[in-house]
Image 1 (cartoon, rainbow, N blue to C red):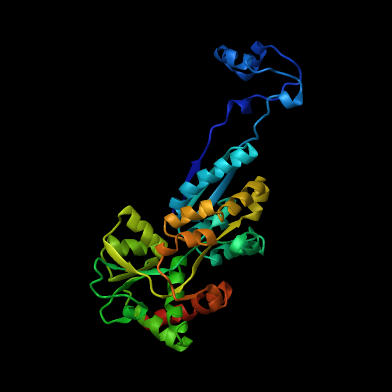
Image 2: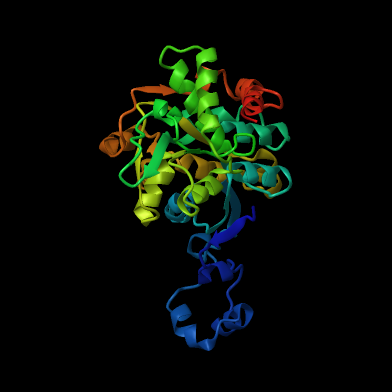
Amino acid sequence: MNNNLFSSTKGQSLSSLLQPLKSPVSLASVALLTGVGVGILPVLASSKLSSTPSEQLVAQKPKAEITLVSFAVTQAAYSKIIPLFTAKWKKEKNQDIEIRQSYGGSGSQTRAVIDGLEADVVALALAGDTEKIQKAGLIKPGWEKEAPNGAIVTRSVAALVTRQGNPKKINNWPDLVKPGVKVITANPKTSGGAQWNFLALWGAVTQTGGNDQKARQFVTQVYNNAPVLPKDAREASDVFFKQGQGDVLINYENEVILAKQKGEGNFSYTIPAVNISIDNPVAVVDKNVDKHKTREVSEAFVKFLFTPEAQREFAKVGFRPVNTTVSKEVSTKFPKVNKLSTVQNFGGWPNIQKKFFADGAIFDQIQGTNR
């Protein structure tokens, strides 16, 4: 996937062009040295030049530049959050910031960073992707402790998206195995979002009293009802909405909410009461910030993402906020989930990968029974 790289910038003020003067000079000399036209000499004349340090013109700090790499659906939130942060930093530090941004599928973004996209901050769909960057030597171990809330900056849950009016009455996980129901979900071997879907399906059984054997039987039946396995969540959405395939699409709640806000598609959706906490982490890429000398501003940006100001912007586009104040403010916006499993219920991402998604693991075995 091509990275969409664009910038949020601010221009420098005139003061950044003028350095403190060590000895008195004429206004004409100032104009010549700075390239300032004589037309602004009256403005300069109104300001007294002095050799006293407290009265000298203070030079603005050079502009800071950092790169944020994130998964696609966060773009709407960051378009609002970044201006808030840059304004705050300018006010407190007297420094302009350019935050370059790249958005795409979480798996693709992870590979791009490992392959050389020099991100200062990564905000990905799952901690498993961040751990891959850590294993590549770009992020130091213990990154989860370097930000609030275990570095989980946003949350979502799984949603069942159906055709308008829900003609096949698909309201919960067991409905996915009804005869004739066609399920659209991406391939968890290539999609991080699809891994969340798989865990939601598995947890729908294990969180309601079933064992792994029953969970495997249920998940196998669901994939038997999947006519195709698109490579990622975006392609799965295209298959459902644009190509008209399937009766139900498993998707993120936040992506469904955002699609509704944009008026995309004609659909209904439900949030199963037994669900998975889709936790999205953020981390500073240590090797890159040290190379770029941007650690201070990068860490400040990550910290800002947990403030009420930023969390409200995430909530506006459908993410469940992790800030307790904002969570209370928007509690009526999100359906209540009675049983919410987490990655820890599955033993953490290393165990998840080994048990479910590694070559020859459970998903491959399930696919073998589907052939």
